[in-house]
Length: 155
Image (tube, rainbow, N blue to C red):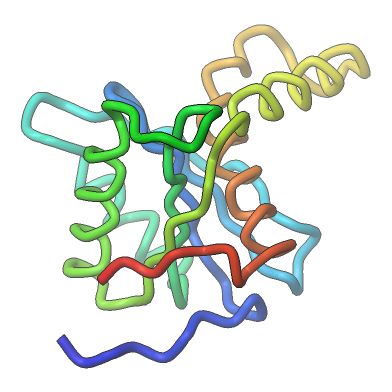
């Protein structure tokens, strides 16, 4: 595959927090105000719901994608890391856009903190907790926006 141009933080990107049962999805760019959660996509026995991902891709037309790289707090591999990297490679093959991996350590903790603040302010309800994976995806995009050179391209 020919080498792709680097992804600029001026680009619109989709971000992903990959789990074994769900994938949180967010949209973001430096032109907006960071990133925002947009969807949670189910993962089935045969893989992610590609029809749902295709709809999101068609709707948002991202110039690139950012996938959370799950590491332990010590920076070591964990079981979900292979799944996240395989998903990132599939995204790149399917959509032909640059895909970057960004350290996602503690992104779920940050997503839960944000949710708690918004719930305390009356902007979120308990049922909105199902979107925490998508909020974690927004955190992942914001990390890339604040430190783009720390991202690792999928090869």
